Image (cartoon, rainbow, N blue to C red; front, side, top):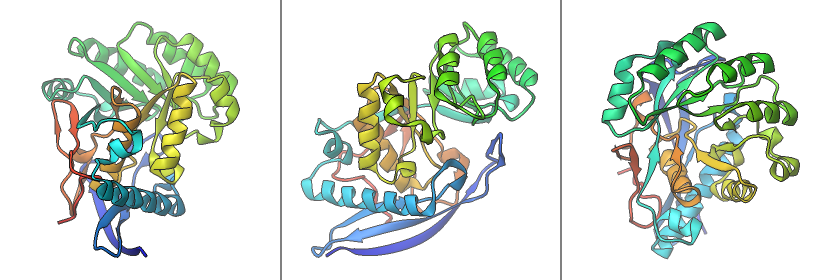
Length: 314
C-alpha cells in the first residue's frame, strides 16, 4: 500500500521568460512523496504548463510515474537512469546554456557561457521582426567563441516562407539546431524545410505529429522530449526508443519544473541519450526553490550515484 503526500510550491522568474506567445507566468507545482509500508519514499514533481501541452492531469501522472520509479530504483539500489536503461549508471549529462531572446543577446553572455564549459547556447526566436532577428543571428554567430554553436527555438513563429528565408540566410552558420519553426507544421512542410537546412530541425510542441507515419519517414532530424508532456518517464522512454530506432536524435529539455522534476528529466536524458547535449540548465532563470538544484559544472549536469533520483527535500 502506497501513501501520497503533496506539497505545493511556486517558483518565480529571475527575468521575464519570453517566447513568441509573450511572457510566462510564475511556475506553480506540487511535489509528490510516495511512501511504502517500509517507510521508503519516492519523489515526483507535478508542474503543469498548459502553454506547452502539459495539462494538470498529465503533470500529476508524470509525478506519480517518477515517484514510483524513484521508489523502485531505491529498492533496487540503482540510480534511476541505470534502472531505466539497464546499463551502467551515468553520472553527468552535457547541457546547453539558455539565454532567452536572441534579439537581446550580448557578447558577455557568450563569453560567460564558454568560460563555464558550455559549448551550445540556446536563444529564442520569433520574438521580434524576422529581419531584426536575422541581423541579430548574423552578429551573434560572428561573435561566438571557436567551437561554440547556437541552438534556436522559434516556438512555432513563422510561415514556411519566413522559415525558408531564415534557413537560407543561416547557411554555413554554427547552428546546432532549430526547434519548431512553423506556425502550422505538417509533414510535407517540415520535410521541405529540413531538406533545405544544413542543420537539424526539431519538433517539440507539435506532439500531434508523432504518429506511426512520423516514425516511418521522419520529416526532421531531432525530437525534443519534455517527459511531463507524455505523462511519465516510462512512456517518454518508449517514444524516445521509437525515435532513435527511426534514426531521430533525442534531446530532453526542462518544462520549468522544480529541482525534483529537473532531476527526473536528467535521468531520462542519461538513460536515453547520454552523449547528447540536453536542455536542462534553467536553474538561473528560477528563484524561490525550496530545494537545491542539481550542480552544473563544466557544462555538465551532475547526477548522484546513490539509488533513485538523488533527490531529497531535506
